[in-house]
Length: 218
Image 1 (spheres, helix red, strand yellow):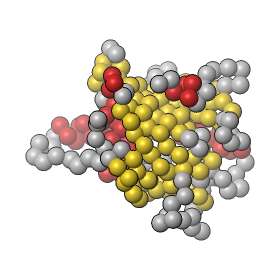
Image 2: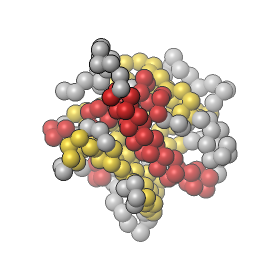
Image 3: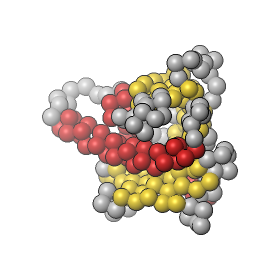
């Protein structure tokens, strides 16, 4: 599956790129075909295998511990072992200039040969979690996460994220576009730090018992 083609993403005269060479993280963006905003692509190397990385990034018991951008992250409904509906409430960001948003997303995870894992998601309406006056309900246009093992080191993953969020509310487009690249850089930084902290904790913990998992490799 060529995800670059699926999202029609290739660098061109309409694309912009931000790099952190020391950390090997790249964020690039171009106009979206789905809404009046940008399609963002973020790429980084994470010290974990694809299957474990996806669990770390999507299971609430993990994500809520490491993602500093989130106030609440919970599973509303599990359709099957690899398909579920999530409710996310963000913290304020951009030095408080962007108030918290909430999102309700349908997420599906698919496993491919060669240990590649692809996550597809999109915002949906869910009657049991309607919009409230407490938060502005945002909308995620079709998004995708692609995790592939590094050929030279299968214990590491190349994570590529495609996101196109509509924050809505009375925000200027300039504020959103100035904030999103940094948010994506921070997300990859937080994921890497969270993985390292989890491994350090596991190394000093008793091996008794097993952590639960709602996602199963097929």
